[in-house]
Image: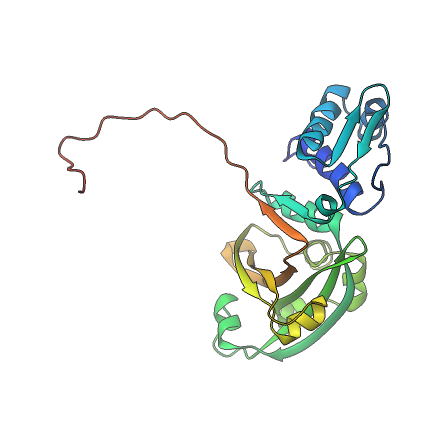
Length: 258
């Protein structure tokens, strides 16, 4: 596990991944604290913190003298949650641990004006590599994703790579891309005919549309990511914490607006 995120949080996400991917099914007992501590090579206190949060969120039920069991609430299990942390490593771990490609198509296409602008391509560049994937969360169809890459990067990819690894990992490990930053936007949208067909939902159904621009060295865009998530399977949670601030008196020379 990576040291950027708190260890208990990584363990919590790993256990949640087991539940979502049906490695431990509804009503099934998960390993004991001692077993989990041994598996993750951490203290029981760290494991207990992770398990306690999952109990609070409803993913696990603790029974005195019996153990800890996966919830019987199928709706909760199927409503996959991703909590933001702001770390690049979390973006990688989320994709690696949870989602698998079931269909991959890689082609070269004429770049639209919008794609060229977002990838900051030279005026004389007319083509990009487009990757279309249908991806599953466990056994459930989850997202339809379209990626755009500069040809010099995209030409080094093949479909076999993307069945074995996520695109982010492939770009990093196989193409030597060093990601430095990502800018992501999310918005509610509706499925057009193509998206509806890929996600096996009715045309016009609500979806979550996510667009992300990945940057490499010198703040140069190296990938444009666009993904449509089934609205009945995706929840996005942002956790806010109350931080006490020391308020300073207003400068008397500044008049408040009325």
